[in-house]
Structure formats: C-alpha cells, structure tokens
Image (tube, rainbow, N blue to C red; front, side, top):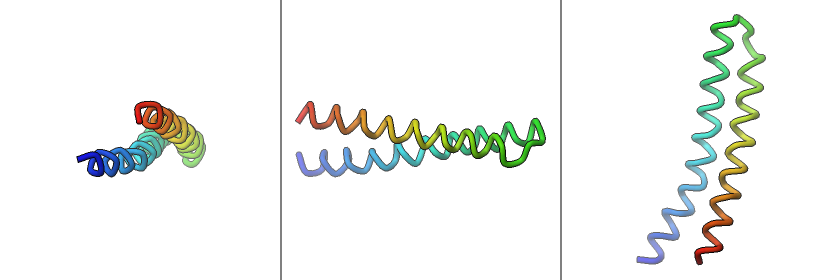
Length: 68
C-alpha cells in the first residue's frame, strides 16, 4: 500500500507542473487574442506558469519528505 502511495505522490509532481504550464499558456493565448499582441502574453504567462509549477513541485516535495 505504501508503494502505491509513493507512486501516486511522485506522479502528482509532474501533473502539478504540467497543469501550471498549461494554465499559464491558456491565459497567455486568451489575452493575446483579446489585445492582438500575439506572442507577448503567451510568453509571459507561460514563464509565470513554469515558475509557479516549479514552486509547487518544490513545496510538495518538501511536504512529502516532512511527512515521511
């Protein structure tokens, strides 16, 4: 049972990172369509999504190692 929990926890790290990037990308594309500034907001919000994803993964790893 503990091995399954470890596997699910490890897979959630990648999912959280990917989801943060996709949300940032989506917001950037949406704002670029509204303001007609094609790559500007897409690049900015994708970078923000990546930074948010890295921060979230580090926070989850810290919580995981603290609870272990």
